[in-house]
Length: 309
Image (cartoon, rainbow, N blue to C red; front, side, top):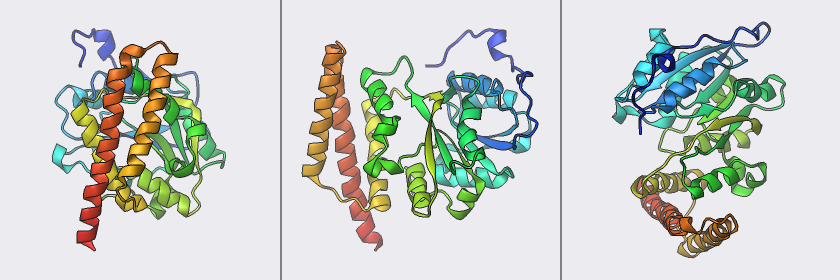
């Protein structure tokens, strides 16, 4: 919910910090996507201005905000040719990313969603350092859930952005919410434009060609969504569809049920061990919605795939 009654001080556009120079640091492009992201957009833009790594150019694309997000973007990015506005129905994640990157000239591309708030002034510096040092071709920020997020969302976010969790099929996991990569990596492999999970599909394709991806634990953003059950289903259903095309996944009710059962037991143990039994009913509904949506998405994805063949 948007905050009201913000002071003039909160609306003021801060200048970039003057303590750290940008001499010798390559210029990077920061691409920010937005749609109705207040009050987070103001906070993300302010934190971006406070970064110690100052040699960046900001590019914005907004897909139909009507809550003041676009006006905030214009305050922080007054260069008209670097701000793009598209209708909501034109928003296809991979296509929009490809279009925005084509508008840039920088050799390192940074993506930061307007609702992803850097947690400190070293976020950008920490994110791009492994690339600048030749240690990685692409990097991803660690995400932490907002204070207002449900218990299960906080637990999933904590687990999901740990090096321990990024193995097996999740080795391909990559989030375009807050990340950086070499332009040359994108020039060789553009973002997937046939649906959602574009960042996962891109990461998988790049890794298969030898791309080096790295999670940067000390580059941290606050980012999470308090989805309704309907919104949660829609998001995971889209991922189920995408998994058919990315991995060739087929709907398997027994395997899906087993995955649901395993995660539900883990959720139960987590809630009890942290003295949060009050969260159990919602946790059960939340986890069941995710797995049912995945399953239905894979079923429909398989039907579409067979028709296309």
